[in-house]
Image (tube, rainbow, N blue to C red; front, side):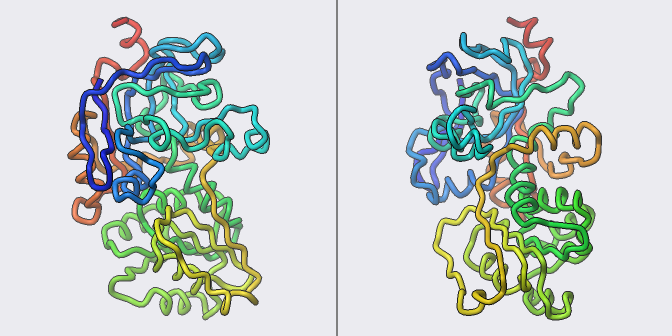
Length: 359
């Protein structure tokens, strides 16, 4: 099979690799139908995550069709259409019983990190019963891909961790896919004002169409001054960091008001200064969070009920074997006006019936 393989910082290749096999009877082998690229994958390519080693197949999002299921898999069989969670969960360990699946003792974020991932024609999913979700035949496949990671991450790590509530003024720093997911899902809780800060005018314009009440381009205006002006010098109730670099986290520290929340989503490759000399008296809550994906079932219902449309996040579409071009588009988001990309495998595998008829 073909897969996108990491070969060290700045090095990747679409190349022939062995098809995955069942290693434990709780595994399933999934034929990828659609997948995508995450900002975390770009951090991997920069070398920000040293746990990812040479030869790893990248990717942790997607939907597909069960090609083979281990004898201990109870919920799925060959031909079933499934959503792949970016988090692998055994469902039995102490952390899983706390619904903290990201810290599963036998799983967590391992796909495309510690084991081979989804940017491939096939992927092995450990603990398939707990790490996959069934997709009904009438579901929009592209929307379902957004439920693997981006939507639950923005919601759980930003909105829920930040305890957004009705009437709040919130600021989202970073209008990439994760920031946009936080923007979309924050509106479940009716904040009074949503300020989106970025350096890309195109993304800020999109944020306006998604529900932002104010946008700030931090490359040509002072974001701190602007936020303070908008909040009568009180600061925001919730500051959501959705980039993962030093200046954006420090901006959150500067703009959050007394009693507020800083919810960090970004993947940080460098240390950040915590300015306790100014924060110690502000009654703040600062959260870090790796997505647990516990909200996938709820978000699934909101998507099916057309209460939220995650397809808005998709700007570019490629065939799976065009993944090198897709990385170029995703990595040059400002130039290409990219949010999320969709990578589609061969057409004959795009639904359950056609897959079963070919096997």
